[in-house]
Image (spheres, rainbow, N blue to C red):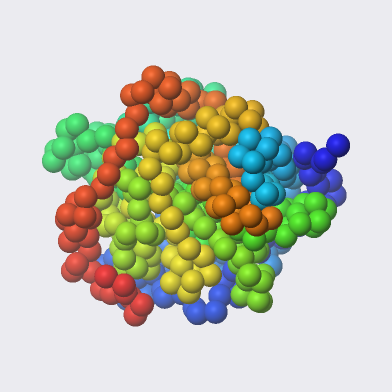
Length: 458
Ligand SMILES: Cc1ncc(COP(=O)(O)O)c(C=O)c1O
């Protein structure tokens, strides 16, 4: 019988995170202070983040030790299994060998606790009492709620309103772990009130929820803000995934030709692929694909520019692919992919052609998710279905070409709290949401007055 699951013993779990900043062929352009438009330094970030995380944000050390307290908590769900998708292969009749890393086995159901636990730990060490954050689909908010409870920190989550209404059980998970969860935009912050004044029926967006969470943190020195994606330190923490995967692929005796991950702010994709990007920098031939929704096509249709990370323009300006900070994506079910920007690290790697990007329509992603569920069994989060859809496309391409490709993808989370989305799909209520070019042009006009990075592609 063929091996289905490749386990790594706990003793083999990586003890360090990998920092791609040490190996990038071209240095990243600096974030800019939102007021002065000068490069933002560590002090500019200190009202929102603790200094130990800011140090990681700017570090160029290749390997960073994982603290024992974090390793101990990682053992609750890590190392996660790598699966051979043998039933999907048979169903597709593809000569490709498909592998997926199952990050859905964490207690919160996704990859998000990989950084939530590190961020909660570093905040605890720095003396933080309360953490605020945003969440889209609720995966990040629930992960941070759990990790704050491990370290005795209070947690306050602003959840994008459309997802709050679509996914009541995510809110209950957060509350079970002791957090409070508010639909965003809310009347609790100036940012939320100003958005509601302009549009009382706003479905919310990650950019808006970030504005609210940042505002709720800066007013109080015992409170810090935590971001579940986009930033360098988040990508760093997520590399535990890719480092484990490399060991597991060695055990399987295979090496990927194609690596796939869905991309919202970029953290699961980055965590999975960055150790392999290092191999690619050193000469390996790998096609590394980030997959986004066609209704929020940040990498495939947005320019590389400076933009705010949030709607109300409170964060530093980040050099990234963006659709503009006031872009409000259609209310697709993959709430965690409804973000206007992309991680600066991934944006730079895209410019340097070390990774590439594709976008997929909502219906194709659900069709892929159902195929995956009916072959491999697992029901994927709607975000994750973007990766599944691309893996299926690549497997069918391999079949057409008659090539024995090795396809590896990151299964970023399960969809057991997203069944309302499946119901909408199975009863024919879902549709594709094409994004007209003039809407992108309108949203991008908001960044026209901002400074431009050297590698601007607008
Ligand atoms: C299961 C899952 N996958 C992917 C994402 C997208 O985020 P990121 O691009 O940071 O991995 C999310 C975000 O909420 C998620 O919940």
